[in-house]
Amino acid sequence: MRITALAGGVGGARFLRGLLAHLRADEDPARRDARVTVISNTADDITLHGLRVSPDLDSVMYTLGGGIDEGRGWGRSEETSGVADELAAYGQSPTWFTLGDKDLATHVVRSRLLAEGRTLSEATAVLCERWRPGVRLLPMTDDVVETHVDLAPVDPAAHHGEAGGRRVHFQEWWVRLHAAVPALAIEPVGAAQARPAPGVLEALREADVVLLPPSNPVVSIGTILSVPGVREVLLARSAPVVGVSPVIAGAPVRGMADACLSAIGVPTTAAAVAGLYEGLLDGWLVAEGDDVPARPGLTVRSRPLLMSDAPATAALAGAALDLALDLVRKDRAA
Ligand code: FO1
Image (cartoon, rainbow, N blue to C red; front, top):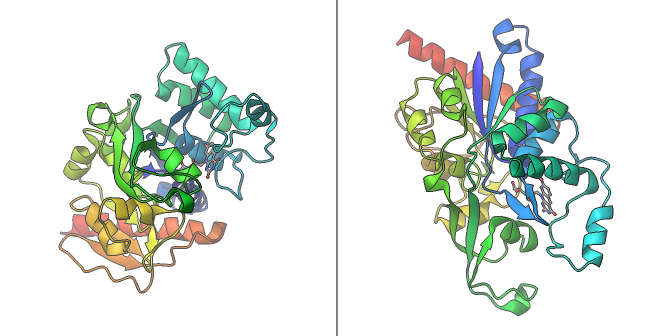
């Protein structure tokens, strides 16, 4: 069985770890030996101190490879900040984005490979030789795409000196401003011209099942879908697409997805997020009590969505796969 998943950072990475745990423990050889390809959002990527940082690729790579800081969900475990402290002593900004010493080595390797003319796909493959994440990890594109955010004008006194009314990189909005300054628009700059990275469209075309983990529907999944060809291939595919709602009872499961949804005028509900994936979704896992009106071609099931520990996360991933395989069987029987 070939499974392809689109993924953002922390939530996507944790779901994928649950998926691998579920698959490897299964007695059915079709599931146990399933091959998983992950298409990662790269529009959170940013150049800092001359180094190219790819937060979502790294979160998936470290989480599946056993090197993640479990508490934060990003960066390396048992990290130190010697280089960051020295950069701050030189007055080098930004200081609001923490790059740990071990994590910096990843960015040095990636940046060096890119400077030598290798693609992001190739650099990712080199990094994965060390981490062996157990999936084929592909960036959505080898072209540079960066999400930028138009900040609403705000009272600086209420926002640590930030007056808004300007455009910033997504990371500045997310990390420095904690998405507390309302966003007027969120744009994946460069996405319209980007080409899918090698293997991306094939992985979607050849998949038996496509999964959308509970990643941010706007800046993670939405951005991957905005790369020309991705949405089109998904619309034309025969394999079922099953998503897991990133929203429970009107609030994001994790992170600040509500601020992103507000920026594009979409309510923070499981039904509204399913609406964003209109035409793509065949199955949608929601939390108990989240009402998603049935529509032709969409099967909705409720399951516990909190990825509170390893067994709960594996069970959630298993439920997404069960729903997808039920849809395959239903399709064959029709
Ligand atoms: N998130 C933070 O909230 N603060 C940080 O200082 C920070 C540093 C960082 C460094 C490397 C990396 O791979 C991720 C990092 N993140 C940090 C997480 C990241 O910025 C976001 O959570 C994702 O981009 C959203 O998916």
